[in-house]
Amino acid sequence: MLKWNSSDVGIYLAQKEYIDTIIIPLHAVNFVDEVKKNGFLWENLIAITNEIEHRFKGRVMLCPPFTYHSKEPSVTARLEQWIEDFYDGEAKHILFLTSDKAWQQE
Image (cartoon, rainbow, N blue to C red; front, side, top):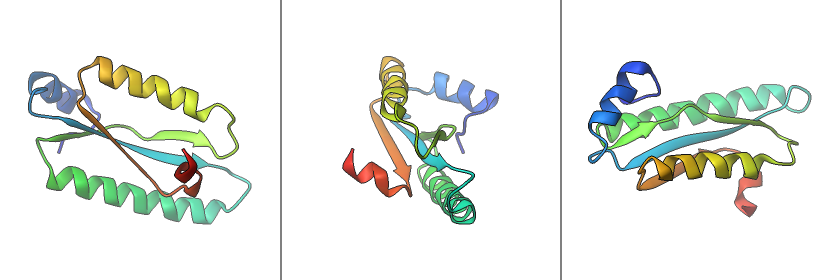
């Protein structure tokens, strides 16, 4: 499994030409509204991303989650910086996974 830790990032850097996809989980955090539901959605999101990463071992890199407050106004600007950095690092594909319905409009 290639995850965001020191040894796996080293493998990624050495094998970059074979690892063509970056997976970024997107998750909203809000400690006021639907906290328990958000925890459940987080567990499911991580299970799905781990399974995808496991099945495509050696072809994808699972990044740390992009976590944001559900009412944060500038979330897309922050995410655009992540995207730019990964493309500058020669990523060919970026896959975002989320359970937040707000992203359907983006």
